[in-house]
Length: 315
Length: 271
Image (tube, rainbow over all chains, first blue to last red; front, side):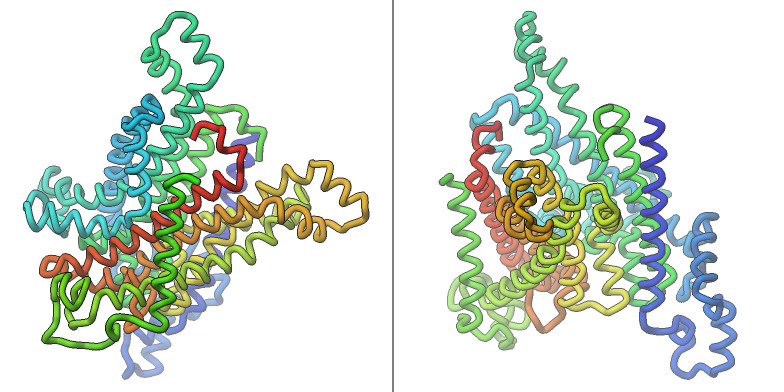
């Protein structure tokens, strides 16, 4: 296990290094000088040069790369060109929307998928199974942002159960904030729940075919008892892996759903920064998202290897 | 042939034919403005209604499907034509530096969520259909490389491949003449999956303004336009949304059916 962790840690660091270089280079070759953009077209050359020096834009590229990475490691994500505020402050506000939204969606996805998958596997090839399978086909095909629009149409505009958009913040209490995140979370969760249901169903079906399940039945346990005591426990391994991977999907997926609901999360921050050409914000936020995804995948891999020792020897 | 497969084939073929038909004929000019006829509900002279500028929605869906299918198809072609050779090369050189480099490279690309990659590309080069295609094409490369490598690796242990090697064929030739034909079924199934995903990706990117730009219609752009008008005229959002669902559903069912047909071993396994 130790060797496996060290090996995975090595590839984690390598991935982060390459990803950061890619992001830095891509932002570097982006057209447009942030200083010129901030000062407008009438800027004097000497003020431009002064601002470039202030922003650290005149330093050599290698030096700027290390300054950026060093800053990020110590929690300093740079200063927004447009708002002149530290990017870390902006990110902190936005993360308080995006991460709860992703967690909320993940919970919903699990709460829908696990019972549905168990039902389908237990009633294999019966009408309940076919209904679940049909629903998952639809769930995978529906674009989540379109589903979000339909949810708004029905639950926010017609029935007025939930707000159609916006976010009141966490200061006004838990309930208004959760209400504001409910429709976005449902929209995000739907396609993921469809995928997870299929994984749950096929994992359980695989387990049900195993010899130890027959042994358990032979020992006198009922079908239901074998399913709950032995079947589920073994089927959960692949399901949990997918749950872990889905979190990174959901995290990235919030970027689009935030657009539908006008939620002040990381996604809206990225889009606003792109239109303001506030590239330092784009650079740091994208790096943060990629960092999140890489680390989540790493943790999932380790958890999987801890549960299933066979995997440690592979790769 | 199963019923879902037939449904998938009919849906996919229907949309592809409709998209091709739009090259020579649409009920109305999809760019033709007709303000007095704006926001008409479905039915009557305009079968699926009109939008806020009085444009015929059926015509826009036909042309929009063509754009969406084209974006997905070109991105698929990029992923396939780069990813498959990389995967074949990795499998042929299992364990050496080439294999290692290809697989590490894949890990890196996988670390970038698709949307983040698209955002980076458009942030730098500006939003356009071409950049959306590049982003999704780049995303497709490791997908195909991985699937190809995974399917090709076990084949290299088989006798008929060894026989070809003993007969003096070099590894690239063996890959091309013996490995590739034997893994083509897996690749075709993966291609339908990525094609369906491409339709959704185009829709998502165009919806947030990073994909196809006006005046070119695409299903995602129609949804973006509909967002502010959805309360006034819900059909503006429902029609393109249903079109996306039907195309994706059709391609997914087609892929599932093809997998069963092309790989008879899977038929007996619990689904």
